[in-house]
Image (cartoon, rainbow, N blue to C red; front, side, top):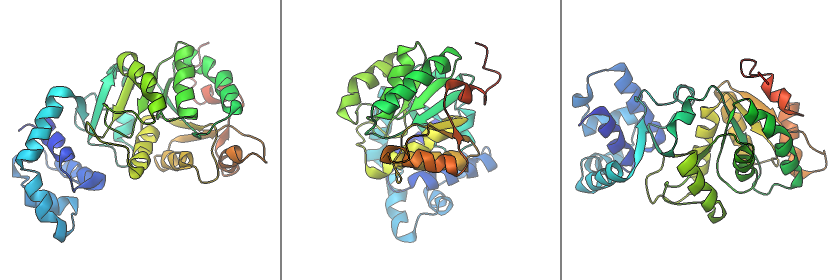
Length: 294
């Protein structure tokens, strides 16, 4: 079993979690050439799996069931692992990077000069559309690739406006790549899987559980040098993404809004806390002088 096969098998084994996976990746990075010595009991120890759960994991990682799931994903999926040369450097240097990324579409988009993550409310209104329609033409014209989560509201609008303005976009989803959530994003996801890029760390048939969306947000924040929040309520999941970006020492920007609009409350708070207020595309492009050619 080579390193890529091992990481895929580990990722497909229940009971380890993203923190445990990453601890094993760190161990492998510190002990090159020692994969053959990484037996199930050693994996449990390194991953920090609780003693009462170790037996289930250690049996699972060598089980026929996981072998069958592994074979299916090798035959039906395209994927990157943490040690692949194509694995995006920005993501590798972020908090808890995924050890496996399944993908559909144009992987070259990960090598674009700059990526910009855009997040916001699922219940966005006409103000979000106006803001994106004002900002994204110039953003895409200057080569920034838009990253978002293919959710309803700001996410889908960001992808759509990027495409409408002849730009490129990457979607990061919280289900397996053969599923769509919400259903309203299915056609957009299918188009992006053929012409742009769709990413997920979740295996085929995985449904979107609540914690998946928080885990997905760390990938959105980790892929880009900057995260732009367009509309967000006071306790919005978009603020989690912004905080993850800050944790990665990345730039955070926000679209200001009316002080009496609940959908702008989170953005206004971010700006008050030090995020850059974005009033036009130039406010974003000023952070990327090497791209500002038009």
